Image (cartoon, rainbow, N blue to C red; front, top):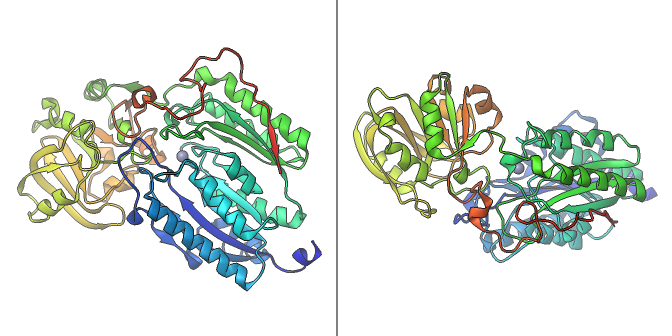
Length: 496
Ligand SMILES: [Zn+2]
């Protein structure tokens, strides 16, 4: 180890992340994965920003970061291409000298056509390339899945502790700090791993509310144990039908018995509250949501069109909700409440709208080009109120007024999860009576602006009603799909 500590360590940075619903007909292609490299990749992580102690403690070597917004499975050729570019980049770094560490920014719920454990395959390939002596530290989403091949390929692994993920960058920074600490110490820790046979949607496991709040609040006390490096709880990803999908606990540290006891205690705590998980917002049918919104004395009233939430993997062009709202006379009259509805993507429809002037009467069929399962294209007849170009995600975007409705149509997939997304179109959420958007639990700015909310249980690729989707390949028995004749063992497996 003397040679290692005598010089500045060389640490590579790479990322490859998407959350993929295997129930979504969307396929993630090259356009879905913006690529970041060079200084821009290193600059993402505050803990190694210029002027920080860690910046000078190592040579930070950017390889490539590819992160898509959630969607359907990744096309096999796209996965192979990005994986190949990352491995080539690591090979080039190895040709220049030894690599002491690799930080991997991954999600854990990437599905690839024809594969069951994409992250396990990817990280195993990284391990095979760099060899056993390079310290690999992975940062994940708590909605990711953890398999033995993945765990066996990393030295360190952690995940977010908040949902919504307000600690996403803090988590990545922690994974980087743990990597550097491990290099300084000169030996890698052990991992205590417990699979927990629970599979729940994120909308029932937000850490804003109990019981997830209290469960995750147990982590700091575990981590305060001097034998523990990191403690992590994964909820897992409910919208993939893969054998790896379930909850997981991993406690990392240097004392086998102590980390096993902590991991088993966190897993037991998770199991013990399993019956208490409920939807984070008041759930309801879309009809119930609209009636509550119309009756609400406070505004804006928010409706989550949760089954097609692109932030969880929904396609984003399911028209089921839009068609229902267009069919609701209380919303389409000239005196109807101001209702924003976001959004449907449809490039050909945008092409038609691009030929019009603001203020024109327009008539267009939109949506359901990718996911037409729940409903066919929606027929929109109204006044073109706004048309913008150049949105990094959505491309060209139109707002069509139909009575009180403001229907947002985008050229490409885009999530409307922030107040700023609406403001960019001249639509002020504070001034709206009702906001309908494709989202599950509310991200912070929308959470703050709403004065009433229903989580509408609408159909789509991330249907909150898991039984409506049908899982066939997950491990059984699994709560809440099955009854349990006896308590699961929840014994920790120790991995080097
Ligand atoms: Zn997540």
